[in-house]
Amino acid sequence: MNKSNRLGYPELRRMAPEALRMIGLPLGLADRIADVLTWTEAATGRALHAAATLDGQVTQTVVPPVSPAADDSHHQVIDCSGASLLVFAPLIVDYLAAESHRGVYSATLRNYVHPWFLLYAAYQVSRAGYRLEISPVGHSAEQAHAFWGSQKDGEQPELWVSITPPGHLARDAVSRFPGQIFPEESPLWGAVRKAATRVDEAKRTGIVVGSAELEWLTGIIKRIRVKTSARSEMQAG
Image 1 (cartoon, helix red, strand yellow):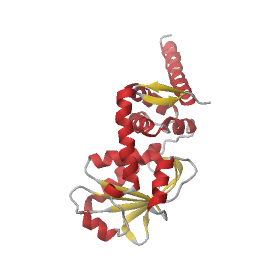
Image 2 (tube, helix red, strand yellow):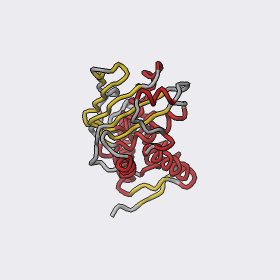
Image 3 (spheres, helix red, strand yellow):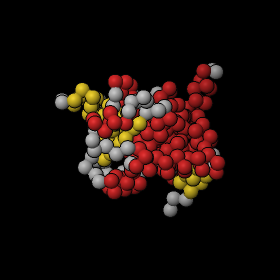
Image 4 (cartoon, one colour):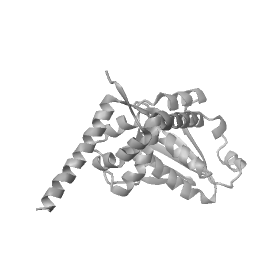
């Protein structure tokens, strides 16, 4: 049985960059993704588990392959090739936000794992004034609610992602994507609101972390500190 422990939000945020460096992320990116890891662990309880499955598998690739859709210059196909959205979610949303300077921009996202990291990306980009919507392709509203609520590894449908920049009218998005559900009524934004509430609570009372995940986290921190200590001793002669 995986017993739980409680970590302070700042404590996990402090430990996260070192842990991410040990699973293969470069220094600057590890510090940024530490925010993703900490927020998502507080929101869903699945971030550390996901990171532990990536130990030794993360490459230095920091941009997923992007291909333009054949019939639409405002739409891209992004294939993550089985990579975790722990790293790719904020990078993909940043890319789409940059491309949306002329209006609504969209992408089809496929071959990913760990979709719950998109909740953080949606929350963050909304604070900059963008409207982001993500819908599982071919899902009804009820199925989409279940998708965002389940947080399971098994289901990985293609995702339709669209982003509207600040200052663009909602009707521009409606005319371009007539089937789109907007944030105030969408399954994604229901999940984001719940996640943000959990994060606020965790900042006050701490993050509940499973014993297996805590053991992985403290073990990986020890590994980097042992390496650093050994290097220091060698350099000291």
